Image (cartoon, rainbow, N blue to C red; front, side):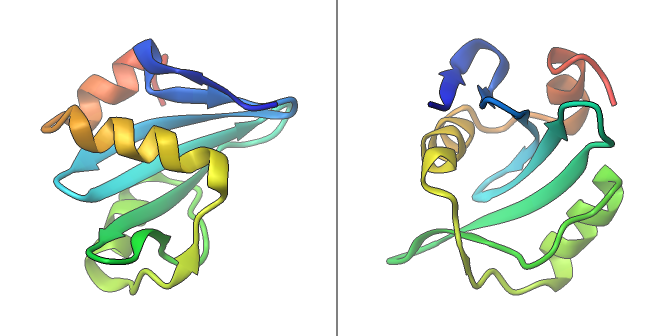
Length: 107
């Protein structure tokens, strides 16, 4: 069962940790760190009337995920346990990537 950890803006699952590393208005980037593997970054956008949507694909660097926010179209359904994390990130605006990365233990 996924466990939300509000103090670090993260969710811990059996196999990985999902941590907010960038939050700007209604755009959020989450770093998924699978156990024993390289982290991946996923970009999400809040669409009025549709809730949270994911921009397709993932990135291996934060700057790539942030670029996807600027050029991508959010059209993928979000994994249900992430919605609470994304809502929490949106409520704690504005927070810089550097602050979030420091809180998450760096990049």
